Length: 292
Ligand code: CP
Image 1: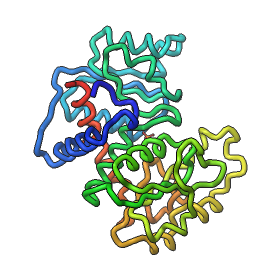
Image 2: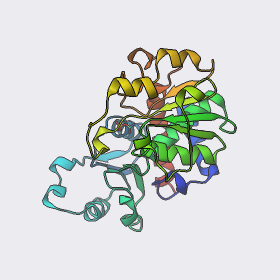
Image 3: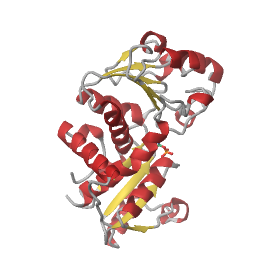
Image 4: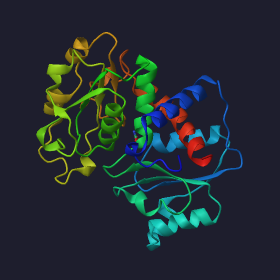
C-alpha cells in the first residue's frame, strides 16, 4: 500500500489486514517501530483528534517529526500544495499526512514518489477515521457480515459517511441513512429511513456532527432542539437500542444536538474507544505505507 487516500482504493483484504495489524499493536503482540523515518503533518483544516492521534502514533513508532505549521509556512506567500509537498520530500521526509479543505487534493501528489496519507479531504474521504471505526466495530462484534448500521445526520457534508458507507458495505454490513432532506446525498445509493423506525433493530448507531462550517447558508433555519428531537440520540431512543448495540460518533460532538449530553459516555457509547483505537490504526497505516 503506497498511499492511503480513499477507502474506495482498499480491498477487503487490505482493510482487514490494517484492522488486524492495529489490534496486534494495541495488544502488544507486535512492537513496531519506524526509527529513523521522518514525517510531516500538514493540517490545512482544524483538527484535534486526527492531528494529535497521528502525532501520538508517530511518537510510539519512534519517528522524527518535522514541524509544519500552515500559519507560519510559505503557503501564506502563495506557495502551492504541490510545491510545499515537493519541498518536504526534497528535505528528506519519508511520508506526508495531509488534511485539506479541497476534495481529492491528493490526486496531484500521488506520482511524486512519497507516501501520502489522507487525514481528510473536504467532504470527500477520511480513511483513517473509517479504519478506526471498523476496528472499533470489529472489536465489538468480531465480524461485519450481517451487521445493521444506521448513519445519522449531516450525510451530504460528511467524509466519514462517505468513507464508512463504502467500507462497511464492502465488508458485508447493511447500512442505512437517517438525515434531514437537505443533508441527504443522492450520490450514495443508501436507503433513507426514520431513526425511530430502525433504532431497536440496528447494531451500530453512527451519529455525525452537524457541520455548520460546510453549509452555504450557515446556521440559517437550523434549530438544535428540533434536530435533536428528530435525529438526535435521546434517552428514549437509547432505551430502545438492542442490548449489545453501540453508539459511535467521529467527534467533535455537539452535545445536546447529535446526542444527549449525558449519553456521550453512557455504557453503549464507544466514542472515546474510537479515539483510543485511532492511534493504533494510524500506527498500522504509517508502517504499511512507509515500509511498502
Ligand atoms: N474525527 C475527527 O476527524 O476529528 P478532528 O477533526 O478533531 O480531527
